[in-house]
Amino acid sequence: MNILVVDDDRFIREIVSAVIQDADHSAVTASNDLEALEALEQGDIDLILMDVEMPGRNGFELTQAIRELYSKHWFPIIFLSAASDEQHYEKGINAGGDDYLPKPVSPIILRAKIRAMERIANMKKELDDANTRLEKLSSQDPLTKLSNRRDLEVQLLKEWKRSHRDAETLSAIMLDIDFFKPYNDNYGHQQGDECLKSVAKILKGSLSRSHDIIARYGGEEFAIILPDTSYDGAKKVAENIIKMLAENKLPHEYSNVADHVTASIGISSTYFNPITPNALLQQADQALYKAKENGRNRYEVFSP
Ligand SMILES: [Mg+2]
Image (tube, rainbow, N blue to C red):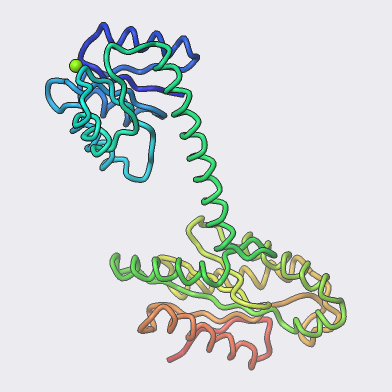
């Protein structure tokens, strides 16, 4: 662990640092509030040992400030104080501290507390990692690993607000694999799943910007959100997708438009003044319907 020792007394900083190093952790020291905040900003601090009686902001005030500044990132803070009455203890915990050690500090107790805090910090980290994984799972389509519809709606709303704030055009694409039902009926569902995975990969490959959002919207339907993109830009993306599908030649003997897997694509953008994010998708869906009517394996742009 990287342990930050905050104390205005140099002698104590040295003793505590020696205990820390002895326990195979590394120590960073700060003699006042400003140095402590600077150390926090610079490094990955896992634990703070905090003096209470200091000139400037005292340990309680500094802890409160740190908890506000780093509200998303918890690490244990242990107070070291010469005062050891109950009110003092209570004040420290209320300020955002996790434990309290009286001075002079016993090296054995200090080592044991560091070990206990390390255990808690590790559990917290595992919990955070598990939460991140869960969050990802709940926003991901398990088959294609693309965003699912729920995540698409969340991201679309975010981009919708951003495009209004920055007065930028936001475009949306809806895409449907052509003749997917006969594909599934003839090649089987397993092959159907492989086809969806392959198309997802091709779609991913067709987008070059990391902030473009691509999702599996339903069965064989995909949606793409293109921030800061005109419908002309979206047309280029659609052309590219059709070209890449043709190049990849995923065999489809039961298609009426080609001997490989193709897609119909509908495009709309905020240029056409949809009132809500959902209306933008509906416009793209209408354009998709037109692309199907006009013979599939093509794209159409929404026309009001
Ligand atoms: Mg002091």
